[in-house]
Amino acid sequence: MKFTKQLIIASLVLPLTLGASTSFAYDNKGHKGPRGPQQECRMGDFDRGMMKELALTDNQKEQLKELRKAHRDAMKAKFEKAPKPDTAAREAHMNQLKELMMADTFDSAKAIELAKEMSEKRIERQVNMLSQQHKMLSILTPEQKTKFFELQQERARDCDKPGKGKRH
Image 1 (cartoon, rainbow, N blue to C red):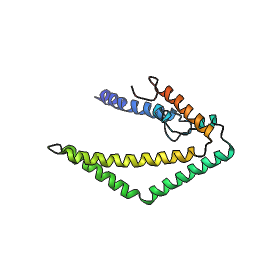
Image 2 (image 1 turned 60 degrees about the vertical axis):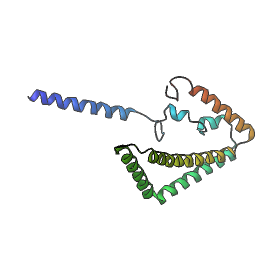
Image 3 (image 1 turned 90 degrees about the horizontal axis):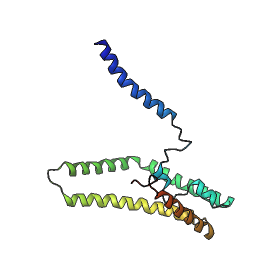
Image 4 (image 1 turned 180 degrees about the vertical axis):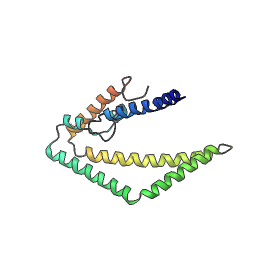
């Protein structure tokens, strides 16, 4: 009986220990999160490597830095101002989805209403993101813009390769 308990404890502790050691061994090189293929292949992204290839002037670098800081500050202010209503709205939405899925019969009108609500929020976020990207592109010269889109197309071709970016 004693050996069985030791075996059970060892079988529980060993995976936990190995999992913890691998997570400590992972070095994310200063990134705030993992940068997998999906993030590397996002279109419209102003990453540092691409910016180096555009040969930005010091003035342009400073303008981009100020624009990023202003956007970051605006986002912080937005989320600090009203974190609770967003949480309450999200919980209400999740409850509506749960009610829809738990109902005896499927209410397609309610599903359409919830899908439209989600779609509108997504569209709003997309427009905000495109607006920010447009502001950043407006800092570039026409030649730099051309080069930027060439680099993006090159990145898109690389991301279309199997095993990179898109899930196949």
